[in-house]
Length: 574
Image (cartoon, rainbow, N blue to C red):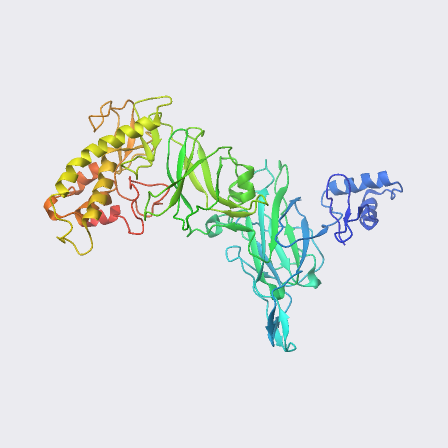
């Protein structure tokens, strides 16, 4: 039994089985050491003992004890607080197992594993005196392997559990006020009773990293280990906090720890899975689009938006994101726009501040345990500063339009009327194309082995909406060959004039080339024949650009499974 201040009142002993909590006499050994250092006598009264215990905790470079070992329940997350340079200990024991008859199975040697976040730094933590060799496990792999072992015959008909034990930890908050990073928590796991207090001192061969961008930082604030249930009948866990460097730090680390035989209680979305993308923003709102979902009912999820206050070291922690979230109420509706069609959901958020940086998360959270669930990779975005750029979507005809457009009304314009004005103009222009394509017998005449008149109609409509409904960008955005600066009261479309300056994000050249590929030759549709003319009317994807959330041209729902035309490719053509 070891001891830790469970609050600022006293050192307590927690006995999980009996539920008895009371002041224990075991810390006297630690007090003897403290009193020897201070050259004073041991107190006799309980109040004096209480005072000395608190004083000992504040003595620099001195710790009375390590932690109380707290028993964990299966699939029940616990929250904790931890001070610098200390270790909190937990214990988990299986109570139910899945039975599978086995005649023989290998028995592994005692196992201890450790994971670290991307912001881990080498620490000097006062821990247990028990020492054992450990294996380092990268949090990105989320797995642990035995440190060797040997086989033996088990009696015929013996049974052992199958599956894995999942241990996850997310950091909710960390000390603030100092210079640099306070460092990240570490998670230690042992399945050997010989090391029932795992931690830095009990694990001298722990691998740590001083690089906060390791693995792209995709696991910042998140730790996980999984062990085979056959090797995890009893598991001891240590949560370790580093020593703070420098002066000015205030506060401690808070975290949430989960142990489950059913599956990970905390999940960080991998970088190759995209649950949600950003459509666009204006000065006070943002629009997001989810990936396709199957089934008749859409998934239950919520949108969490944070401002600048969330530390980058905690950017993959669900409980941290919820702690720093901005209080907004998104309007979530279903839609079929976007690439690859299919059922999706869109979330419109208003009430944001203009010109401010935010991060958005797609979260699927447990209804019974806050902070438990899946969190996506963050989408970082900045609201616009231009007063005459307004976000519109859900247009009846140009149903793929979901971005900011120039507006000649300042203040709070009627966005529904603005969207309808743009949409009706595009539909009226489209009538001439409808008349032309009707002259071709699409039902009996094949002009392509891979394209049909339906492809032609869809691609022309997409192109037409992109060129007649310009996509508005901030006039503070750095100019490049794919932006067109508009600083006049006369728009390129005579029917609609705007006041003030703004940048236009030009339509992607792919929209033009798709028409040439999809439509019958008799329409004689051609794209600009030379590069200079092309650059005046169309934009391209920058090489190695992030295609979804920071576009370099107006794609209007292009299917990104087909590689778009890049600028480097265009330069090779001419």
